[in-house]
Image 1 (cartoon, rainbow, N blue to C red):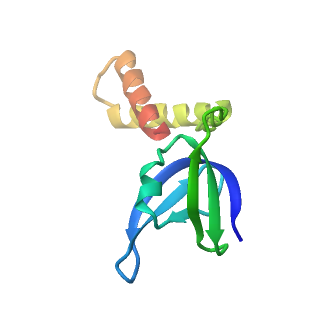
Image 2: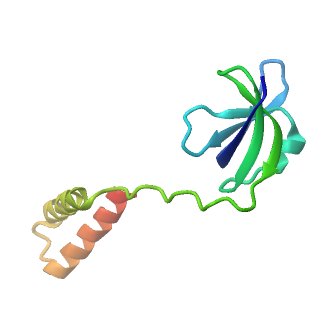
Length: 127
């Protein structure tokens, strides 16, 4: 039974079936279950980050996109959650400072350079 839904595309992956047919796995924002498309013409019209009205047919395991329409008046998708709250950021900063102090102990570097190194470590930990 066909179903019409409004979705925001996050990612599109090209795949090949066991029979050698190409198909595309479409990851949708806010959903664990991906959608699938076997029509190259339809999938060429999909752009990650944009919102579409899609008609989906098929099983619950393999929902198949059969029609796509761009939604031009869609609201902006919600911004991803911040990677860490204030407490978590302070803990990461302390870990980075401790690691920098251990690595640079005995080098005679000024505190400003140790702190700069700690900030680089913090950036790496947060990425």
